[in-house]
Image (cartoon, rainbow, N blue to C red; front, side, top):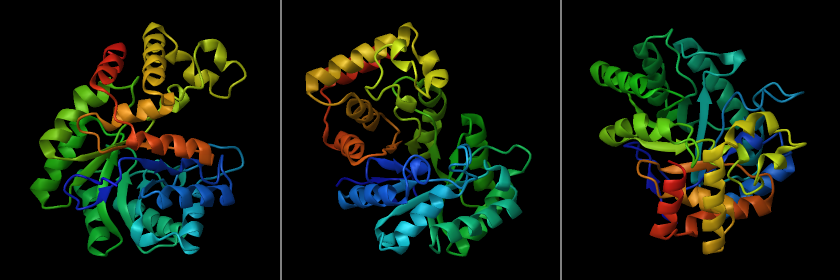
Length: 313
């Protein structure tokens, strides 16, 4: 399978990343193992998680996703074939990007993941209370210790990302080699107008979250009425404006034209976008997983990409 490099890190990943937020939350341990086996068995290699997953869910406190992945790795999950990404800074138990917090949080993550290193360690959210030199210095020590291969920035504005890159260069510290922004067919302005110029000029990698707009682009919903009784109603209602309706219509028509599921088309569109290394997407069943993995083989015709592009402007 084609691999794409993450910035200048020397790390290459397949064009789709498995979003591990579902592990230990909406998928139990055994189902998570099944999905991970299927994903890696098809040649995909990147798994994204975070220490905070899934502290928002009733009865959970955080660390569940990392724990499940660690148990899978311990049972023969081919650690050397996996690019493992996790994050620090958002979880209330380990909040912020101080040096002490970063170093303690990574040790906790490594214990849950049952590994001696992570491939990519993301600053999960910007922390303006801590100087870049302190944060990057902590990451540098972890890289030198062999506990981290490369670092990335999630939920950073373009200005703050550029400032962090400049600080790394000035201080001779490791730089963020990749970013993790929200980006999808509906939510594209911030990425394309702000982050993309920095990504391209600095040759950074990018892996997007909310790649299916929290299910809005999955094909499950056609109108706002379809949200009735859904746990996502409050979150997704705002998507169903005139622009959202245009996007869904175009997505449905393109999907029918190429004979592919809508989620597959939405991900294939993302995979074709400049500056994006790979989208992150989750699945809770083998059928869903096979559907999203199929996006890699879907070569959207130029007119289909232009149709989606025009509808989502």
